[in-house]
Image 1 (cartoon, one colour):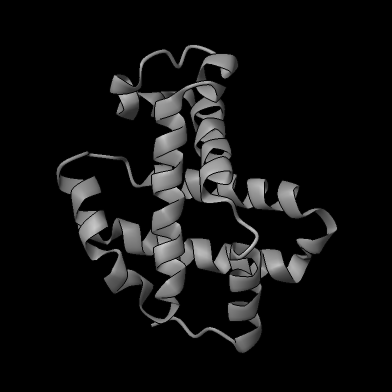
Image 2 (tube, rainbow, N blue to C red; image 1 turned 180 degrees about the vertical axis):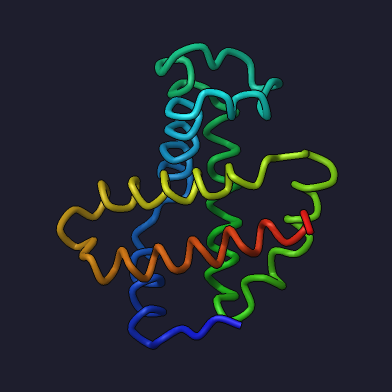
Length: 147
C-alpha cells in the first residue's frame, strides 16, 4: 500500500480539478501516438494516424483520450486504493487488448508533460513529484494483470 501525504493528495487533486479530460486527454494520447509511433498498432481501427495533423484531427483519438483520462480521474478518486480500482481495466489490457505495459509508463510520462505545459510555473517540482509518484502507482495498478 502506498502512503500519501496530505500535501501529495492536495497537489494531485488540485491539478486534476484544472484538467479538461476531453482536451487534455486528446493532447496526451495524441502526443503518445506521435512521439511513440509504434503505439499506433493498438489503434488500427482509428483510421488515418499517418502524421501529426491526422492524429490531431482524429475524432477517435479525441474520444479515447477522454476515456483514458476519465479512468485516470477514477483512479484519483480512489487514491487510497488505486491498484484495486484498476484491477478490471488491467485485466482487459493484459488479456484482451495485449497492450505492452511499458506503454502505460510512456503515457504517464506524456501526461506529466501535458500537465506541466498546461500549468506552467504552477506545476512546481513538488507538484511534479506528487504526480510522478501517482503515475508510478497508476502504472503499477495497470500492470497487475500481467503477473
